[in-house]
Length: 134
Image (cartoon, rainbow, N blue to C red; front, side, top):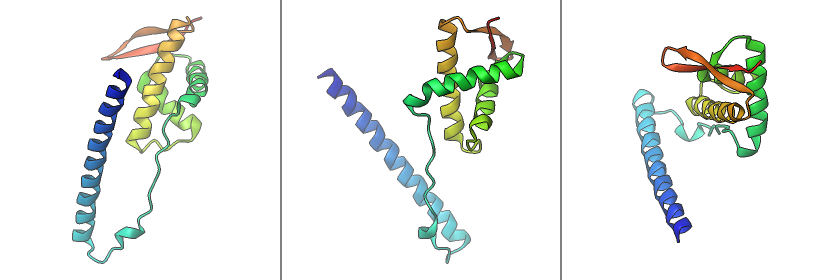
């Protein structure tokens, strides 16, 4: 019963997000029509955003460690994420990709910290820096 309750909550949240996306697309279509009434909106191709899959987590961990090895200095999670995006040839201009990679980097760093492979160095402003344990 608990699992069903959780899934029902996830479904409602997904439906709300879907409604918001539909509204956002309708707003964008209206702006496009204002700027160019004859533009064929239906011809705009759908772009799929690649997100970090669970099975890719081990590969991400290796990429994070590679980035820290090459840096030779402590880095923040956004710094590591940006370098991982470049290393993997992903599109850094897509905010969802950047956020997904940074979330994955944070998980990988916490996991590696638990294994004693990385540690928190010091703070760079409000952001914690990470480095390899020597």
